[in-house]
Image: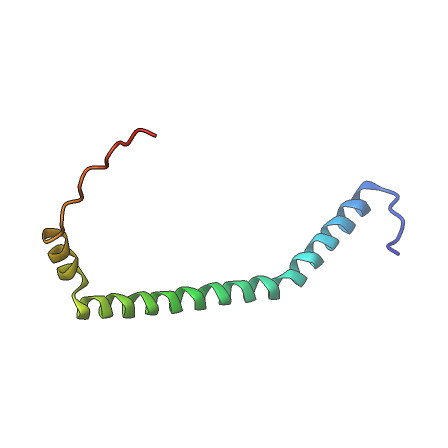
Length: 82
């Protein structure tokens, strides 16, 4: 149990000490989260680069534009009365 607070300076120092202790105890968790975020950023960047390189090798843009030029037009939707 913490000591009983009888005056304002003691109350402020007790509150600041408790807050600082909580902040210091949270630092390892914060650093761990930042490391995981950084690793995820690096892995995502590498995967995005590899995917872009693979899509360029397969020439997806060329295939998509060729497909768009050669597409068969769709017939208009018929309106049938029920």
